Structures are given as structure tokens and as C-alpha cells.
Amino acid sequence: MPKHAVEANFDGLVGPTHNYAGLSWGNVASKSNVNAVSNPKEAALQGLAKMKRLADRGYVQGVLPPHERPHIPTLKALGFTGSDKAVLAAVARENPSILAAASSASAMWTANAATVSPSADTSDHRVHFTPANLSAKFHRSIEHVVTGRVLKSIFADDAWFAHHPALPSVSHFGDEGAANHTRLCSRYGEPGVELFVYGQVAFNEQAPAPAKYPARQSLEASQAIARLHGLKDSHVVFAQQNPAAIDAGVFHNDVIAVGNANTLFYHDMAFLEEEKVLADIRSRLTGTELQAVRVSSAEVPIEDAVQSYLFNSQLLNTADGMLLAVPGECREVSSVSRYLDDLVKGDGPITSVEVFDVKQSMRNGGGPACLRLRVALSDDELKAMHHGVLLNDALYERLTTWVEAHYREELSTEDLADPMLLDEVRKALDELTGILGLGSIYDFQI
Image (cartoon, rainbow, N blue to C red; front, top):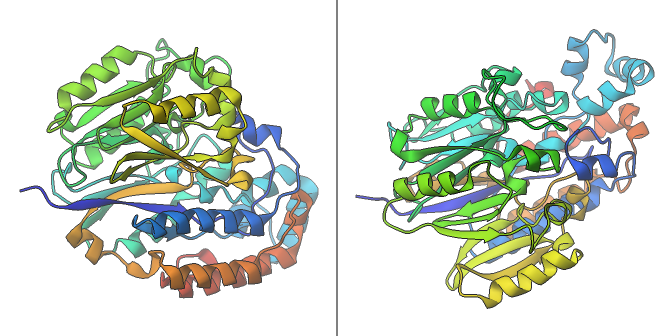
């Protein structure tokens, strides 16, 4: 008998080293704001405000902690030696780009943290987690170890949860996590269809591929995760991303499509074989009909979709249909704003739109959907997880006070070499693990 289940959202808390180093080739927003001065405190408070709004509406909302940055173990592995202060000074002098990579707060985008399959889909009826190797970008490839520790701390009971190591960190198995994974279903506790979207077939050089920007997710990685999670063929669809979309700046599928329950909201340039993808989903989806909400290029040109991050929005169930939680930039692009007005006037599944201010994240190329990892949990699984990370009024107040106490209001890339910043980060994170009850998860704590 199907279990009652909810979809919990676990948002990444923006880290104290949030900065604009422009590290992500293929991410237009990241490159366009390179070397601007960031405001880590404002970024973290914006993220918390987003979480609080959703928690106040009754959604299960969790918090995932930032990672330690700058990451001294990474720098030492690259041959920089001596005290932490000496390491920072040497790398800043010899190669500031490496320091920027080892200081990135990109773990805030937890849509890339892992791929999660709920127990209704898996062969052993446990929730499965695989941290993303993020091998396409050096600054992100160092995240999966701590991500794995965090997920194991929160979802510790192996009677309910299964954890896998990240896939081999090579381009053939490049994995970007849930940003290229969507689950469609009748109800969260019932078997669904897991849609894996890939950009390249790594072992077939003749397969279609983008010409300008790299494809970060491989078919082989998606297939490996499906095997690891014990998914049946009847639960899986593999779809290739349109190479032209990647070259237009759609570096992840969640920049051009988002799904929830039985609804897929997508741009007509999202998939290489659109009709086949829809047919494959419909043939596997049970207990409900797929609601495909297609946005045409005539309505919203792909450039406007990328600029506004229309599809990097959260699609959430409400009592009166679905809510689309969009970044504020969607109201600044005329074609997108006009489309959203028409959307809610129609008779489709999306009945309301709300704007969220995540501008600090958006300037680095991440909207509301980038900031959250979705985990479908049955009532028993929800009870079994660690509750110290679930947002309520008291935790929100504690985290707000913590951010106010520990975060800088301005940060430039030159500040990353300041040894005082590293001390500030470690002090803040040591306190945060106590607030969230996560134990020792950082290298400096172990």
C-alpha cells in the first residue's frame, strides 16, 4: 500500500566567502558579474528569508550548512606548504585563480549536492543519496566529500536511508546532481518516473554535443546512478538536453525545465527529442496524466529565459493548484513577466506566482531552484531523519543572529587571501554545527 509522503526542500545556507570570482564557464550570470563586490551577509539573509517564507506556508524546509572555505586541505594537496597563513599568501601570490576556486561558496546551490531517489522507486525501499562529483568545475569538484558527510549526518539511519559515494571524478561520469534530475509522480509516496537529463554521451564521440559550452552531465553518469539506486526501467527516462540550449547558457536542465508531481514546466528548447521525452514519461507515469506546460520560444526567447531564470523556479503544491516561486528578475524581463501574467489566467496546473529576492545568488548564476535539494520522505522516514536542520521560528532566529554575528557585508576576491577571513569562517562553522546538531563534518573539526 502506498505510503503518505511529503517533499522536503533542503536549502543551502550561503557561506561567509560568497564572492563573484566568475568561475563557471557556461554560466552567463556568473561570468557577467566577475570581480564585483559581494555582500555575504545579505546573501545569507536572503536565502534564510526564502526558506522562512516557505516554512511559514507549511512546507517541510531544511537547512544544509556551507562548506569550509578557503579549503586549506585542497591547497596543501596542490603543494602549498606551511601554516594556513603561509599557504594563503603563497597561493594568492602564485595563482589567485586557484585561491578563488578553493574559496568558492558554490555549495550553497544544493540542487547540485546530490541525486535523491525516494523509497517508492528503489528496489530496497530505502531513500538513496549519491553526492554529485561535479567534475566539470574544479571549485565544485571538491564539494562531494563534505556533502556526503552532511547527508549521512542528517539521514543516518540505514534502515531507512542508503548512501553512495560520488561517481569517479572524470568527465565520462560527470554528474551535476539533482539539477539534471526531476521526479514526476501521482503522489510523492507512490512510484514515480525519474527523469535524468544529460548533455553528452561520453563514450560516443559522434553523439550530438554543444559547440560553445561544455556539457556537464553524461548519460553514463545518469545510468550509473539509476543502477546504484536500484531503479527499474519502468521508473526511469533518460533525455538528452538540447545542445543549442547549452550553448545559449543553459548549463543545467533546471535552467530550462522544472517538474513537480504530475507537472513538467519546460521551454521548447529544453530537450533534443521533445516528443519522445514526453511520450516516454507518459508511458511510465501511473495513476495520473502528465501535465506538460510548454513555453515556446515565441513567447519567451531562450535568451530571456536564461536572463530571468524563469525555469530555475520552485514548483510547489498548494490547495488551489501549483505555486511557481520565481526570482525577482522574472519581473524585470518583459517577455517573461508578460508570460507569467498570462500563465496564471489560464486553466493549467500552475495557478499562482510569487516573487522571491535572491539577487545575491542570481548574480552568481543560481535562482530559487538552485538553492534547494528535494527529498521525498514518508512519514516514517521524516521521523527517522535528524530534525535539528528543519527550519522553524526558533531556528530561523538563531540562524539570523548567527549570520549577523559572523558574516561580512562586503567581500572582494582580494579579501580571500586574508587569514582573518579563514579564522572567521572556522569560528562561524564550528558554532553552526552545534546549532544544527550535525557533529564534526568539517576537516578542521576532524
